[in-house]
Image (cartoon, rainbow, N blue to C red; front, side, top):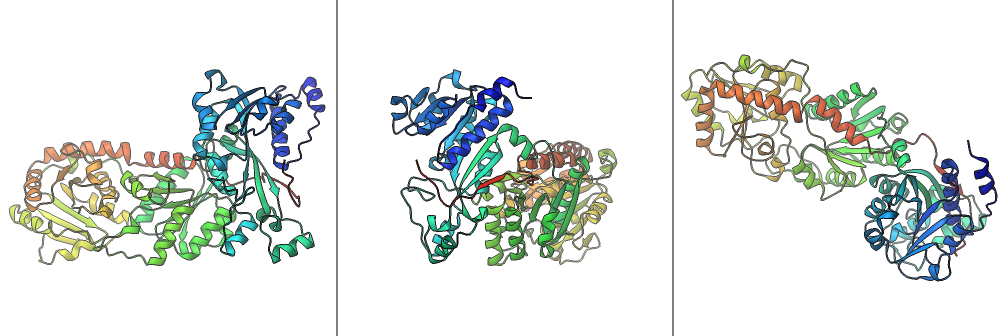
Length: 594
């Protein structure tokens, strides 16, 4: 309930600024002050120019602290209460401590597009706001239909003023403006579109027809400038900070594949079990626009086709968060890989990396490579979610009658280890070997103690592993960039099924296996494999200790609990699908410039 004094105070306001963006900035400020019952607001105006807007604010009882690097006219004419002569960067670096947390609003009128690092400045300026303070900003919209028409004519002409002002360092669409504020910890509570006809921005014959017919301007095409009110409170309300997506749509080229199930279906199922919601995993070729009426978040997995890419663009237009997930360095496949990706699909994948709100991958090494394409990369580790009880090391390892396990979905370079396996089979009469997947063709010499299995799903794979006593999993790896970016998922899968791991001393396994603590790391030489494996085959007590420690690490970094927390942390800063329209459009044929 507003106090009578507050009503009387703001009932006297007579605001007469002609510039539409400044008028709306003031109206947003008045709305904020009304809601918070602030009688005498304190405002920090960045880029106050000659102080004409500052003076209008002061005439309405607002305390104004101006910052301007190019002129002190605002100070000389007495249009501000206090003044800093310098850039916003200098102000943030040198401002007195008592200014921090002292302002009800920071005003950035056509400033963000001139900054080298607008995100850093928003974060810094946020420190000058009171806890419930707001940022009021106006920013030109580079997707205005006039600019698009100019580009269609093969032109990009800078101007003295306007959207293509020659001093602009950054260009914003509505999406990139919203994301900028979100990345800085502010949600956009209110948005106002200042409209301007196409002809006024880029005269053309088609635009002249529109101008002469005086058609009603379409906000989506004719937004010249966005005016926004942003706050920390709106960040909590408009992102998944305090909520979770209810409907998650996953698009995969192979929805039933081991990769999709391990990477997305099971972990997201675990997440939605803890945060009730619905998951739909469909073939990427089956996507249609009606699905966007249902989805709160869209996740695209691995390869991208043109239909899927258009679907993702449509999701972005509807302001539905898009996540692109990849578990391999698919843009740089090695020559020995059995997997191939046509150039057109690689181009679509690169475009999707730029399009997505977030890109998720499995390891820090893969993240580093993907950051060549986008800054929005986040690691979601591959995890193993098992319904079975934890393996008991004493019941899994109890003798030297061991079984070596070699599994791969690709033609990894295992030539160096195959002779070592045959040597070990000759050394130990009771030793057996299980080979799963495409590497089976490497074993051309028949042996009753070598059992080969085709590629299988994760349930069958788990059943095979769980049925092996005294199992030792072999993870040979080459030193290619592609292999170093892979996930250590087999290490976790072996561990969850009671299998001890021996791996090449290379990433990613060298990053997760502590040598002689929770597994064994070896140099890629036949002697190293034979010597160390022969010792491990004889020493079941050592295997018990390795498995015990590996189980602890799995639970800590690659279990279902870890998956739930990782997805929760990923979703938290993403914008919720809009439940209400934030836009108030000013249907104006032109702008008046002060």
